[in-house]
Image 1 (cartoon, helix red, strand yellow):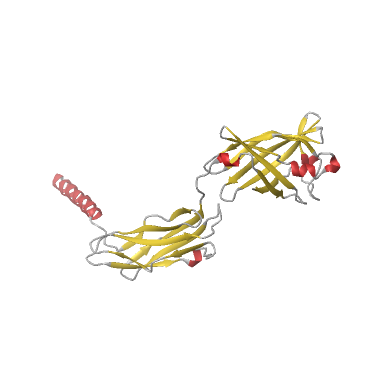
Image 2 (tube, rainbow, N blue to C red):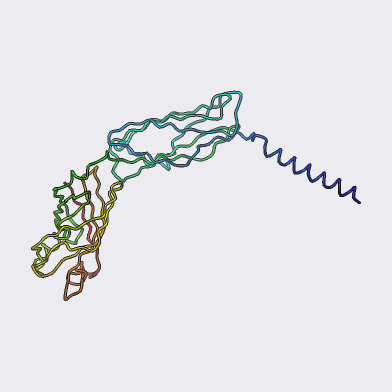
Length: 286
């Protein structure tokens, strides 16, 4: 009985060792793929860049291996007015290596700031060389580093999205690295003169700006005196887009009425729906 147990133990150990040995042996399936599925490519206006992308095979070979490089038109936004590209038709993994390099050239002609256009490629093999996965390049414009102080003293103009758009003139002040915006909501108030809300005073609203993204928010702050009697307040968010020299604003407008801060929609509903909590949106430029 003990002899049988001993033989059984030896057999189990042999099987485990054999399994481990199999796992350590190199794979023979000739797969080749990208190391990632996507990459963001930010470019300055007019910039041309060459991108080197590596592909890897799971094993080596005694001869060169060639794979086709194909643009996936179903997953790519092609717009020759915004960017151009040059893509090789194939990539070679040299003999004795498991790595190949694709060199692609892209030029930013007129990519919109904040706009991302996908350019997707994949590899094409044959019956003996299998390929896996796709790689998407997200192309977009970036701005050169900018000096926030250059905005100081500027007046940016645009129209809001009210039923009848109002002209907004937003003044910018920069003090100790912080941004202040004056005149928010004044265009709307001025064109509703029948309610005696024409601004008689203007206050600068402090904003909390992220200098890396240009995004900012502003807490409930006094923006002016409406009709010489009502304190007007705003609260919202926005973004400074240096490439376009533009500021976007999305905010709500309030009045101090009988000791309470009340949304202005309670006085002037927007259209037939009478939305008493509407948001005003405006894009202003230099």
